[in-house]
Image (tube, rainbow, N blue to C red):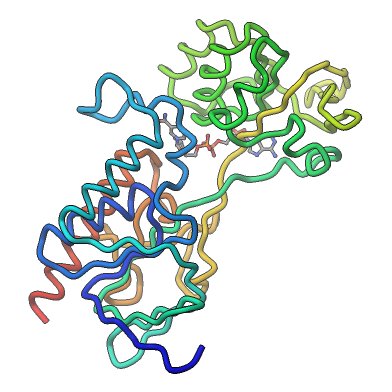
Length: 308
Ligand code: NAP
């Protein structure tokens, strides 16, 4: 990368999910020059939500893609620039941040990491081989292929239970396999899932996904008895948690699960460097908390820039 101009912004945000775009909107509306960089364009995990039903004030529910498109338009309407590009390095020189992509370089007074998290794999035989052939990590994307078919969901958190609810609208034969006897999800979500007729398989793990060219069954082991059974299914939807995307800022202090530690202003141990949304260490990861993180980071960055 030679002889490329370096564009300067007050505030650069890496990640155009709901934390990043909320931060962009607040910062741009507050008068900062704002750039958002994202390798895949606007969206993030919210794109996989079929019905966003718990965001206060958004009622009736909207789908994640519509919600994110509106967020991007809103941030851009206040003057934020959203660019699709992969950031390859971040440096701090002379008090400012230097952000490089393959084709461009940017300088920022303040920088916000809003890179979110990606899904965790189950790491069992058959998972990789049958991925896209019945193994899926996105119910909204792949659920309609399995209308009126047998469906297995793996996991016990909000994602697994929410997506099982959605899948139960497509098929009356949805089972959810969870490794403990209690779901981790919010109680309202669990109740709704059980009322929708999703069949819970407690204290059990998937040991193998089997099939010739497409998913045909899973081997399930009861963790208390060790007994293994084969459950026929057409699809396996895996929602076993997330891995924070922190590669660009590996030097920052993180919690034991790998999430970036910030103070209540969303500021990391590096002055002017913020983290917002699912990449940050916190007790509750929701769209509403990601948006809140983004707004706080933008507000504190604005104050910092104004008082410099
Ligand atoms: P999560 O809350 O970390 O849940 C992951 C689930 O997968 C847990 O139940 C865990 O079991 C299970 N698990 C982990 N590794 C496993 C393995 N190797 N084999 C079998 N099971 C395994 O992740 P999430 O559901 O993706 O949610 C991530 C965050 O987003 C959460 O903070 C959640 O509240 C939020 N979220 C909110 C909504 C909503 O409000 N509508 C929707 C989606 C996500 P254990 O319980 O035994 O640990």
